[in-house]
Length: 117
Image 1: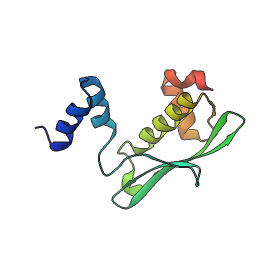
Image 2 (image 1 turned 180 degrees about the vertical axis):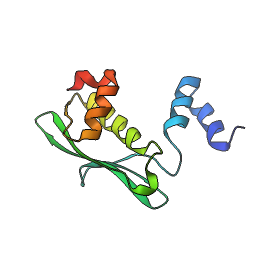
Image 3 (image 1 turned 120 degrees about the vertical axis):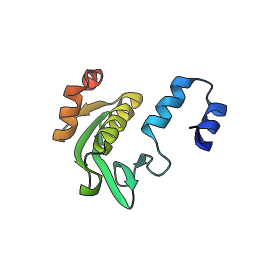
Image 4 (image 1 turned 45 degrees about the horizontal axis):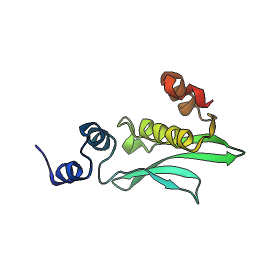
């Protein structure tokens, strides 16, 4: 069943592929935010915030820590944040230093990001 958000997306984006990606990775209540002052990417759901922290230096983004509250575990928030952080690095032409073990494993499992290392 199509909802109002889906219908609005069809007006804005004629490509079905773009709409599917938006609907898959975003819900209105949990959109990933780049919190530059805290140097982290974050997503909040039901009052709980998951985040990926980073340090930026000399065109290298060092992804240092991923935190997902127990209430959000197993729902794909960590993976969504990892993808967002790595796509950010790719878009900005940054190299990635995956200090965080979760990010390191994510890159190992997603070959498309290994060129960022």
